Image 1 (cartoon, helix red, strand yellow):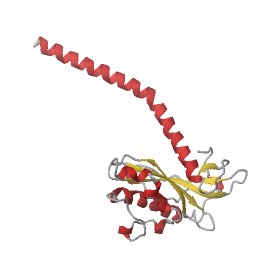
Image 2 (cartoon, helix red, strand yellow; image 1 turned 90 degrees about the vertical axis):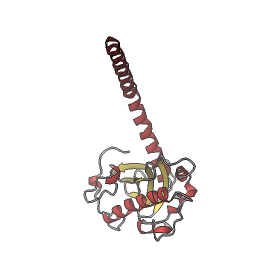
Image 3 (cartoon, rainbow, N blue to C red; image 1 turned 180 degrees about the vertical axis):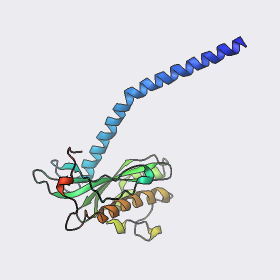
Image 4 (cartoon, helix red, strand yellow; image 1 turned 120 degrees about the horizontal axis):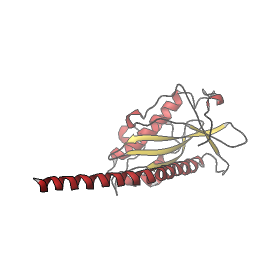
Length: 211
């Protein structure tokens, strides 16, 4: 009995030490990971926005839009729209946003740049954990996301869903996730009036601080 108690105490002590060590490592690495993810996000935003106007001076500012719906609630994410402009002129030349969709084995994040007419000008896969050799090929622009360029929300559909976009071979779920998530974002932005001639959002509604 005593030996069993000793063994139990040793195991408990080992588990406690491991938990403390893991907590310390996480506390050190979590901020670094967060900074790296934010840097990747900003780089992707700049790369996608370059399709609107290839200029290193492009600037970004988040928009707070009261009547903008959120199509990404099922992914526990928000539709956040960022305006793109060329200083010193603060008028918009387009927008960027991240489309979220639950794929075959992960939530896929797609950085999307749109023109003021609501058509896609650039796309980049920001994050995915799909099957290597199959769905993970979504990171190759020519396989799917390049085909979204020039399309508006209504046109973003796979052929299997009545559109004109070919799904990646053997990856219908992943393909549909990306295309549908982009369409959902575009449609909600359109309904909020962002793509109309009269922009529904005042510049006063912009939140301070650039992305």
